[in-house]
Length: 572
Image (tube, rainbow, N blue to C red; front, top):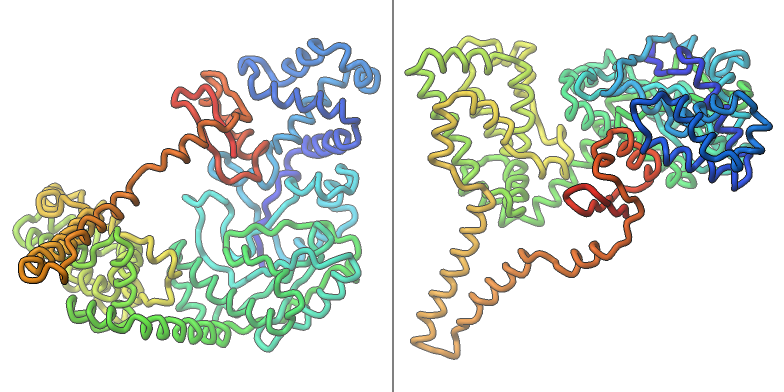
């Protein structure tokens, strides 16, 4: 069994010097730390034409008295120390900030035995990293190597990643307690449950938690069927399905630590940091022959989800029945999801359904008249990749009707219409392929972007469906209120006491109130004192902004930027 090993420390010897600089900084006085903080702040505003080393030399020269003690300690090497500290502070080439879109680093394949050797070897490179940081895990954490256990991918760049599932899953138990308590719980969980059987476990880098690795048989027909598509969103949903079922089984078996399971590992893209395991006999478990069950867990989770869905359909029985009758839909599940989308206000079911069907029909008719359109249609709708991507989105929006409509665009005789052919997988979509919250966000926009490549189709849509779904929904709402007003107006002629002429105006007033811009909120934001002020060029500087968002305010989620010219910003 192989893994992709993501490590920068094996190719960059400077990392150990940066860790050493981070360790020295941590031991400095508050005054000396403040001086290095000024160095960091100045680095973002430096003259980019000068080298990092020259910048550090100038900073020393500009603070001769402040550096008196450090000059005595480091001598000529001080500027090199400052440069190393910048490398530590900004996490230059750290594993956690590499292997993505902005660099050429790729993970290297490593066998399971070599991986275990790396984890446990007292003379290995992970131990050397820890030693360089003085054994302080908080210093070394960002530079530790990692694996992406669930995906057979050698990059973190989502545009290049292959979403081929490995059949492996990780469960992360955090903040268990001291080392003795942590090891005790790891040993209990290692025994597993009826269907969840770990094949590897080890104490986390923090020392107060542990991780367990589980693997399923990837030759299992159910696994092969579920992960046949390597589309990112489908893989993430299928991964989460097994993960959630297994997590519930673990939680039922070990309820005392249910709250300690980090559910972020339900994402197959999740990175697993690799620590140095100092005591292999107590802090590490491994049995390569152990497999967890795939089918039982998935079936139990599917059954639970179906029961939840059936209950929701029952609660909305009248609305679901109306959608089925109005749109000729046979599936209660499809009708329920369309009802939810219709409720959102941004999706008008009648309008969007008619638009989609009419566009498909227009393309079919156009293909019969225009050989150029026919060729385009054959090339695009004979492609498994295009069909699979479009069917996933469109089924999520319209249900099984979308599959029937797409089939009309596939040329006759294509194996994409042959239910016995492997490429028919594009059409095998079901509700279990989707996360309910994500499904509500899906729109047919990607389909229209594709067919807009045909000029005549673009003209047809812009001529016949110029309004947005939201505008149509709002128009229908206003029309409904106006009809009620007309009814009350007619009623007032016969019996004024039974009519309510103010109802229409109350509806309109409530509608407009929801649309108003909240000026008090804007006023509050304007009065926030800016924590950071940027010069006219700094807000366009990638290094400056990256340091603000990823380093200085890495723990913040909301940023308020003030002034369009970029002269200042407030950070919340």
